[in-house]
Image (cartoon, rainbow, N blue to C red; front, side, top):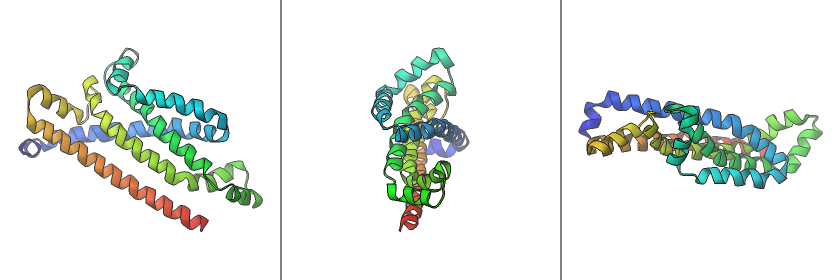
Length: 210
């Protein structure tokens, strides 16, 4: 704890880097996962192949994927963002597809009967009803990115993993403890916030379909 107290500014800097890395990963992950999941939910035969490929990507060891991306993107945050976004796809697409495919067809038919076109039906009916499952996927993807993101320090991506690697190399247990505590705080805080949003969305869904 002494290291954390005496080097709070440095730990805060790395904490901020880790938060920024996670947010960037989630942003680009959602840019890919939202249209991909919507497509897979419409074209059902794509579900098996797409989720199968994403499952294979998810099983690749993180350090190996980081190293494989270095020739393309160099050292730094870029290969880490690409790798973490790739890992997040399985969690996001699977939950998004589940959310969209479990919307009651009768609700969709009722919306169409009210004169909504396909685009209006999607944004005003399907999206809100599938949102809780999507947010559950975002929560899992965020926690995954926070955890795997610590390894990204090995390729100079910054973040709290710097403390862990430095602590191991120099046998500085103060750095290891500070890094572990900071990662735990970030993960627990992110989980609580996203779980709260997930419950709010679920409450909205139940109120809208009740």
